[in-house]
Length: 241
Length: 241
Image 1 (cartoon, rainbow over the protein chains, first blue to last red):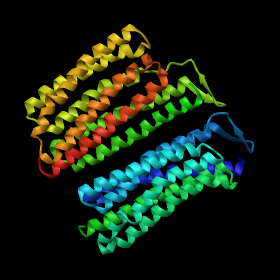
Image 2 (cartoon, each protein chain N blue to C red; image 1 turned 180 degrees about the vertical axis):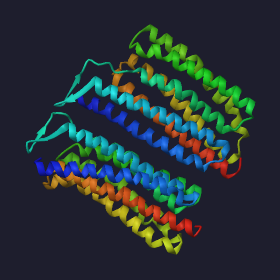
Image 3 (cartoon, rainbow over the protein chains, first blue to last red; image 1 turned 135 degrees about the horizontal axis):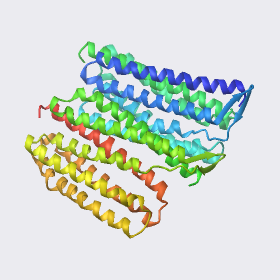
Image 4 (cartoon, rainbow over the protein chains, first blue to last red; image 1 turned 45 degrees about the vertical axis):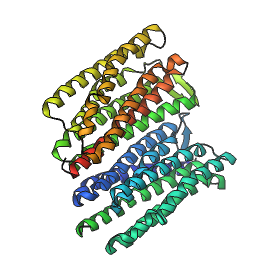
């Protein structure tokens, strides 16, 4: 890692702390602007951003303990940079993001529970299967874990398009285009993670591309996604849906 | 402790901080979604998680002062890892968890006080009797303290099944299955603690299995339990029960 790369990672992580901290407060405050049926979705948006803020603060701390930029040179301290923070974060936040989407559809109770439970289980499994491969920098085993994690991910994509995604047609006309955009955002941004994951195998500098790549896509998949969820909740509240 | 074990404990504790911090805010916010009769139960859920967040922050600090991972090796600093934090935590949170369960039943005032007092006293006694044995790693004395702590624990289990547990039959039909699941969760997750407690006697690496085991079961017994309590409170509020 040279000093340009050091600064890129350093500033990306700090940017994430500011973005997620502000997002947390935004969703907390705007919770009052939606009807009771959608307040839980807004609660979850703020929790996702709170958990992420915590983890980016820890990542920042870990990065600064592991690397030092002095006299224009990056020095390794010998302390470990803890890569697991991201996976611990996703284990909590990824299921909550899917629950946000389920809750905003306002399906019958039984369906909310059934679909909610299946998506929470699939997404937790996806993160747990992804971690062992993330720690391997190269090779066959990394690909095997990647394929295993892609199985629950494929189920989630299937639900988004054909399962729960079909419920979009029963939503009020005014919010259907927003729902489609939100779904597209999940599909595109979430597909970015398995791409970043295999970047090292394609010859990219693993550390810098993974840190900056995951940070960028985290902001899209959590903050920007949460804002779309909020706009849908607010529109549906306005028309009493 | 090797570096894999170090990371397992480190990440489990950090995971708990994020999970309990988020749970605290969840119960605080969702308190607005239940009728006044159940707001106290939600308040207690958030306090349990707040107290636990505090203690996991202290455990994390204590762990990082006692152990250091440098150049891939775990170094002991000579500073004490304070194991008492968990017992201080349980002394406060275990009685509150039982009160949550009593409050959500919405019994007559006199019974709430009588059963609440008995369960608070028994659970505090259980934690106080458990601590002396936890500090002993092996031997006869550890078993004696374990047996002593099992006496109030047996009373709590008895109350859950035959005492206060019988009140589940008087609950609205729609929430009875949820009540049974919540009771089962208490019985199973709480039974896990005395098991983790005696793991060292069965030849398991005491430190790692105890730290990871207690952390995992804490999340089930506090956060997941609290979510079930919230769902019951919300359902009962909806039907005006």
